[in-house]
Amino acid sequence: MAEDPMKGTVPVTFYEPGGVPHYASDTPALDSYGRRIDYLRISLTDRCNMRCVYCMPAVGVQFAPRPELLTNDELLLVVRAAAAAGFRKLRLTGGEPTLRHDLVELVRAMKATPGIQQIAMTTNALRLRKLAGPLKEAGLDRVNISIDSLDAAKFRQLTRGGNLDDVWAGIEAADAVGLHPIKLNAVVVRGMNDDEVLRLAELTTRYPWEFRFIEVMPLTGVAGLAEEGVVSSAELIARIEERFGPLEPYGQDPADPARRYRIPGAPGKLGFISAVTDPFCATCNRMRLTADGRLHLCLLRDDEVDLRAAIRAGASVAEVEQIIRHAVYLKPWGHGLPEGVLPTLRGMSQLGG
Ligand code: SAM
Ligand code: SF4
Image (tube, rainbow, N blue to C red; front, side):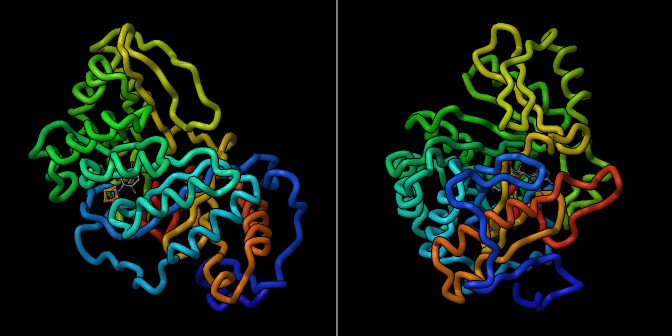
């Protein structure tokens, strides 16, 4: 292992080609707690065409200079190496992934990678009206779309400028081309959009979509908001049940952090993601790749392993696979919010949710 040039400031692990540990290549990557990690969330850019209040500060966001971002060739090398390490599902995120140049061709090449079975994308949908068809044709399987309010003025305020009509057109386009199942996400912040929850939940009585409510997490840049603003899933469920009657539990997918329910008789589902009040670390199956080429081992911790440095020093697919396997092994058990350990280095827009 090479000397960490940022030792003492950033918990980042660096490797040089040839200096990597060796793991067997014929089994899927397991972490040191025995969890199989087979889901890679890839942040394609840290830039965004919105500025959601729970994600980015209004001013002062520093974007990575373009040469620091992984190129398409570098991304595809990582995907091949991840597939060799047993990763099967990819999610493209950001920032806003639809801002990435050549997104459609990138999806096509990722989907053609042997071993990759599913590609999903999380997007604010502003550009989806035009992109949904080409993305579906290139092999994108499904989308999660963020929509925190059904009131145009409130939506503009929460996203600092987002146009709700464009988002709705994006959702309809995704539905029309079959990017199913459509999942919609709302981060609920007390005093900002918690009064919208019944309207948002009601959508599932009209559409066969899954609407997921996410507890706001204390990422860098918004930690103060999260301190005041968390509305627990338990409180949301109580409010929704008061209006719609008892919710029916709906088949749980162990690889999905959302606890799922249904309003009786509704075609759609409700999901609750309670990272703050009821963490799901025991079943965590994921790692994140930042747009600047680091594996981020747990969303709510700072630990990272640098892939870009190894790739730019000439590491082969097999060597990058070994670094990924080791990063999986190093994955922390879970976050430390109950002990007051907060991530300090990256905001959500750099990590992709
Ligand atoms: N721009 C895309 C979007 O908004 O869907 C993808 C990137 S965004 C960072 C990914 C997800 O993270 C979105 O569902 C967003 O609502 C969620 N998110 C952002 N900040 C959050 C926070 N502080 N706590 C919980 N979820 C957050
Ligand atoms: Fe942009 Fe998504 Fe963050 Fe909103 S949540 S600012 S759309 S990256």
